[in-house]
Amino acid sequence: MAKVKTTGVRTTGAKKPRTRKDGSGRSDAAKATATLKRIDTVAQAVVKTSMAGRDPFVDIPTRSLSNTSYNKTKRILEMGSASQRRNLFNLGQAKKFMQTMLLAKGCKDLIERGKTASLRGMFYAGLHTIEGTKEKTFEDQSESDSILEDLEVTLESLREELHVYADKRGDMVGNITLIDNGDEIDCRRMGSGGYGIPSITEPRVIQFKKCEAKFVLHVEKNTVWQRFNEDKFWKKHNCILTHGNGQPPRGVRRLLQRLNGELGLPIYCLLDCDPWGHYIYSVIKQGSISLAFESRRMAVPDAKFLGIRAMDYDRYKLSDDVQIALTDRDRTRAKQIAEYPWFADKKPWQKEIRTLLGNGFKMEVESLITKDISYVTEVYVPDRLKAQDWLD
Image (cartoon, rainbow, N blue to C red):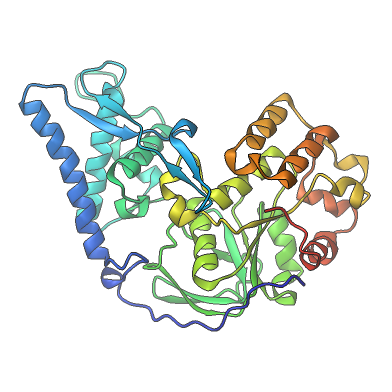
């Protein structure tokens, strides 16, 4: 087994929701007050501009690669200062301006009432046909989701602070006991389904009570996670198993960051050998380009890429049947990832991507099943951990 940092038993008592504090040391009430103040500031600026007879506007920070930089010291992505002005009296921007104000009001109402709503719920809460027209406020949920992300960066408030949450997508099992909203959860006794990782995993909601695990193994898909859980890998190797059903949602990424930062648990990622698997690792490790403002609380700079590796086709003598031909889109995406500043100067990663492109095919973690149904849990991962053979 690889040398991994152990952690002692930790105990955290549950408290009433309205008086809990997060990592910033601020209570829920104080955070709610600060968020409401920021919403009111934006609204008052719009009113003031309108009353002065000028075109109302909102400046939205730009969520793109061009406004993102890689901090080599912190090893995370950070958002720059560029922004885009969204005006009411601009035909190309009027609808988004209205949507921004509509959802800001919706978030304000939620905070004031002490309620929460899902992303889907916020879409329907703001959905209506504008009086006297046939124009709907939103054509689909993707529009409202994007506006909510705009509001997060504009208000410098996390989605959770706006009282909005996403659907659960990810599970956990292993040697840890936690408190979830006052309820004690023993992740050793979660059966075949595991503990469903919620959308909000902030300290005010989830506290770590007792942890005996030595590391976290994060796998890409539920199907692979099920194999590890069924084989009791977490019990044999004293670890925690998580998955995010592909691209891990923010709740899963935040939980991984907390397990690493607060409990000192190494994070190992078992992902597919393809540009998508490489991108998932990039997001876990450095943060998301479109949500770079959240990297400080989401990214895990010390996370390691355990596999699958391009060399594994020869190393484990896999059959031709596991090969999935790279598409033109795959090749383009792989080259883009190779040029990311956080990968560009890493020779092992450059070699990995070159080998992937040279092979001309990609592979999924499930390809190891061609060796044996439990090959990935009994041979592949134990081998990689013992040899400390991973990409950083």
